[in-house]
Structures are given as C-alpha cells and as structure tokens.
Image (tube, rainbow, N blue to C red; front, side):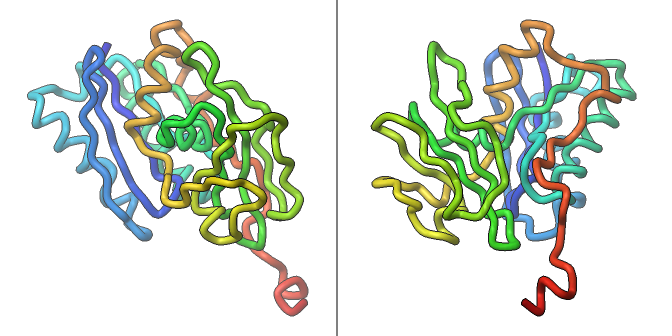
Length: 218
C-alpha cells in the first residue's frame, strides 16, 4: 500500500509517505504558512522515491482537534487528492497522533486551545491500538479529568501553557506529526476503514473560535 499523510493542526506542518511499511516524512515549524508548505512537502517526498501522485492508494490527515484553519488545510488537501484520484481518505485524531509520538503506553494528550482552554484526551495503548479512557474534550485546564490508575504521562503544549495539571511526568514539546498519522492510518486503511473524500471531515471538538467583545473585556 502507498499513501500520503498530512498534519497541519498546530504551528508545525508535516507530510509523510507510506510505502508498504516504509515511512518518509518531513516537517517544519510553519507559523501560518501551512498552505504554502504542505503540497511541496509531499511533492518532494514523491520525487525522492520516483513515485507519482497517481500511484497513491489512499490519503490520511490529522483530523483534529487543533487550529481550525490548520484542520481545514489538511482535510482540504486530503479531500482534493482523494477526490481527483478516486481513492479513500481517512482522518486520524491529532490527540491520538500525539500519544503515538510520545512513546508511552498511558498518555494524556493536551493541546493549548487558546481562550484559556485545552483540547484533551487520555489514551491507553492495548494490543497495539490506542483506546480512549477520557474521550476528546475542550475544557478549562482545571476541569480536565485525570484518568484512573498509575503510569500516566502528559504530552503536548497544553502542559507548557498551563503546567503539569497533576501529572508527575509531562513532555510539553510533543506535537502531532504526519509520521504518527501514517503509522495509525496504515492498519485502518488495510482494514478498509477509509471513506469517500466527501465524508472525510475535520473534528473540531469546539465550535467557538474567539471571545466576544464582552468576554475579552471581562
């Protein structure tokens, strides 16, 4: 199987290429230049392996939560490729991708959602797959529920912004990557879980993108 993967939900922009178990990837701290960088990243990977876009069997993307603009970029690129080529697409949770990137087995993934809130989920790796112990949510840092049991680590920039939130070990510089998205997508695509391009949509978790004037004043 050959497929591309994209992750643009944070300040980082990355693309990956899965070739029958081999993964190539590239990433860059993008600021707000994700839309300029993501396709050239893929083109560079394809050129490196002398592969054409037409040879891809599927496409994966970081579906969220995260930056609303970033999620739409990754989803839009994935939809465009999938629709044009008639291939399936699949979205992967950015919080799950962070857990995958962390190397842990019990992981609380936490992204700064701005507006004094975080995107948060607690995930446990069981028999090679991640399972949500605390489903993805958006809440004030003080309100996020800590999962039961021991051995949990925290990862993500939510911990850099708001402190350890009761976790003994945190890795604040972990962020979702296209490589992690590809690793998570591969078995799902192999199992036929890819969907039509039109059905591949972002997962925002929160609908509100900014404070009102009154809220900013308060």
